[in-house]
Length: 248
Image (tube, rainbow, N blue to C red; front, side, top):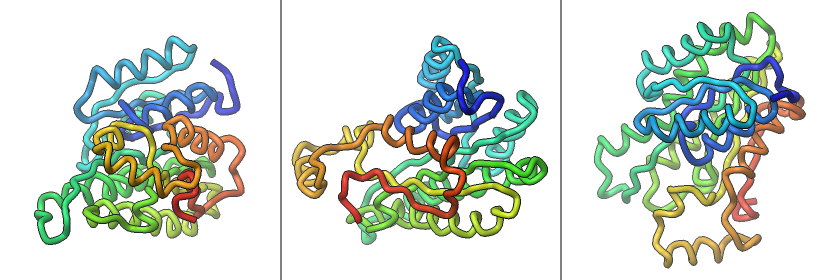
């Protein structure tokens, strides 16, 4: 498979399903070698890699819980040992543990912050030295509309995703001199397992607040990731918001 990302190596965290899977396939279609990362669902990660290979792409599957700093570093080290470098990092890994603040446990708070926010720092800090050495890099953080506007019952998730936006701006300022761009994508409600788990009543209420009248697709988010890696070289510190007009 050839394309504008020929010769580049991409790590996509949490890429066995949903938005991460779509990003891995999209980057491979553009020519990148992709490290498909998963924590628990090996079968889904293998299926993602098989789709990449069947389409003529290349990559490997690496199990790593990026919420753990040692495992996050090991993921990046494995990518470098296998392919000599990492050009693209997509910090996509994330979970939600929804509950109102009054009912939320410390464990529910910590688990979401560690997985959604801290993992981004762990992986980014691991790729930065190599990117600086080569004077090139693309770091893309998958935040959320919830990090921009908040949402009932998602204080932990909103805090993590808002933190990703602030981290993106700081990292963009620090790394611009090395031609490393750092951007955040803030999807609205995307038709993934997370949205599928909502009740029909909640889905109807959400759709009523989306001017375009539909949920987005993981492929639409992945297209934005690909754009930032291929044609979006003058974007850094930005928030791109594929959300159907729900938050403007």
